[in-house]
Image (tube, rainbow, N blue to C red; front, top):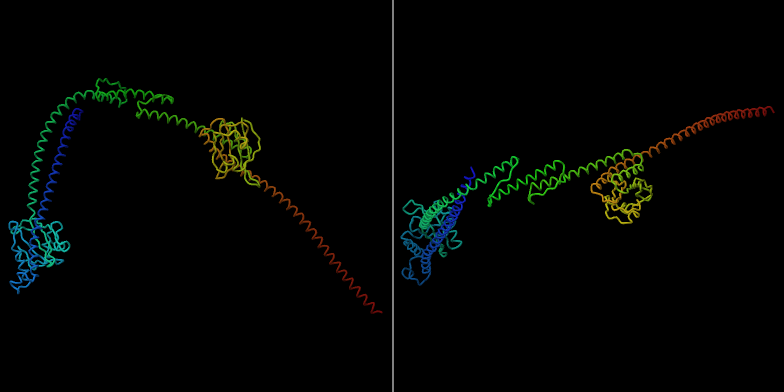
Length: 575
């Protein structure tokens, strides 16, 4: 649909919709008010009818009440006229009199039931005399208007509870098949347990309400026809005016459309010539501002693409999304370049430190000096020191393993206990300490790296596997950047790991040397034991030979002794 047609359609709708909306609201309010009046009329008529039917029933109630009181008065006329008449007959006569009463143009009558439950019994019905004495439990009496309850049972329940009852129900009009609505009022005469009831038709109220509603609909139709005529006239005039203005408007809009198409295609676009001073003219001027702005965007993006991140650019306004995004892009590119430079610097430094760690795994002293020198030179600080954890009989402490400043080694002797000064506190807290306001006497009190007062001091613990192996300290006249501090913290982990490995290697070497020395000592002891054993065997052999000689000597002595005894005996015998 073309713009001209859209404008005409929009103008028509703009004219019709308010008229129809106002008309609809007016009609709705009129109908709502009329319906409220009709409902109010229904309620008022029902209230009047309830009052009327109550007054009629009260008359019957009064008749029964008077008759009952006369029956119990010894001076009453009934007693004087016929003393043989029983109370029951007198009450039957009272019911018979009530059955003869008619009202409401002969259509109104009374009926009386007892108040027995669950179902009462009919005592008198002026129209249906055959119901006398019948218990009213037939389902045909379930004609209560809203819940279809037994109307006699409902009346008895309400009257027993409240003394009276209004009940709406439906029934066939006597002598016809027409179903009509009826309102009954019942009142309990407690001394006898009688429920006196009567009823009135309510259809006439509904008929009057329907008549009023028909009159309302006729009025609404008349109003709708009037509104339709006015709306048609307004539409004709409005469409004519809309056609005139749309013809004037479409020319400039088509020019703007062509320019926007060129912009959408990315083509070079000239500014639109504009003489209008209205909103359309403002649109044309805004388009010209966009054309000028795109030229600036193009030039700025070209410079960025050439790598010139210092190119200046001012957005068209504070809400210039594209201009602000270009500035944000330049900022991100700058940040990316800076982050890349930092990553490259950290990677290069880490590679240098790793190379030092790889080449100096023989002993901790050489490793400490090489690392200190490398870190001081690469970080560009003035001084650096490396403290390593040591242990003796008194406990753990930190010992200065290496110090370096201005490309010269400083062979210093320094011992710091845990918790002493910032270095000792760094070990206890296991966190990096960076000071930008260093006391003048700090270096002489706690650091011992020299007499020159630095501007900043960085102290980083060497931690590996939750074990502190030492502390690295750096002092400088310049402020250290966050990435430089992070680099030292990262390097500290690798240093701690390497120191751990070197210390393990040194302990292993010492243990190996001790093991070799013990092995040689053991061999010497074995040789000495062997020689001792040989000497012991020789001694045992000599002792065994000596023992044999002794045994032979003993044998010889024994033989000599035996010969001596024999010789002595022979000599005796001869004498």
